[in-house]
Image (cartoon, rainbow, N blue to C red; front, side):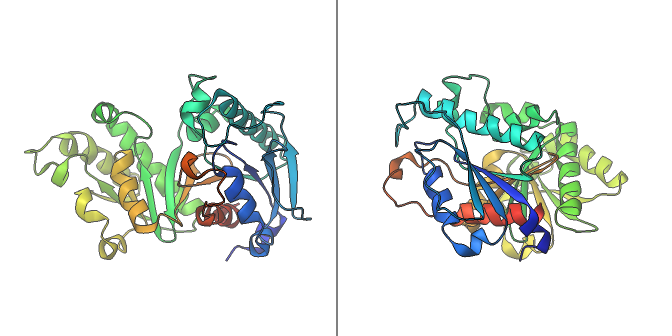
Length: 312
């Protein structure tokens, strides 16, 4: 249950891509009295896309991102992408002005935003740059299951050269700090995946475990962090093994997210760690194929809102 301080917090919620399911899942989530009682909310988006129910707990910060034409429902478009980016930029302004205490972001289409801003990588990188934080991470949370990925949205072919000792050590340190700060775990237990099948099998399937990951683990332990591994990823995500750890550090996106989403797709939450505020998001995308059809399930958005309230 959220703490009492959650009720005094103001949570900003961006609508994401207005042509996707973001506006729908935000409206469905905030239509529930149990959600509205968690905090006060400011929904950031265009008036046409902002269909949240009127309530003393919910206000709107309107942005004229779409102009007169409106959203392109169910499509990737420069208009939608530009609007989604403006919602995010407005959220940054509100955070810096301390008008909101935490941020929940509905899904965006990176492709759509990149039509007008080619340098956009994702929410995590955008917020890190906006707040001048070099060390940030994506932690996926579902109750006691928490996973952080060492590398984020990069091609698979670039993963081996990006998984450096410093990158692994940074991920371990971020996880340790977040578990202590956000979750109140005094001595976090962190499991670290290998990069290769069978964690390299003593060098027969790759040497990154010995040459890159093991040195990061040694440095983390010398710094007082309880981190073990590297483990074979294909057997680490078994529930009976996960119970021994507070967090898993995966080496790349799909290594960590496939098991997480398989185990808890509807309730998993993306928590950005390393920022000076709490930012969460549902762990699904824009779902253009069902946008505008009243088919979207708000479960992951509700989970993201709850985590933001509990941690802020």
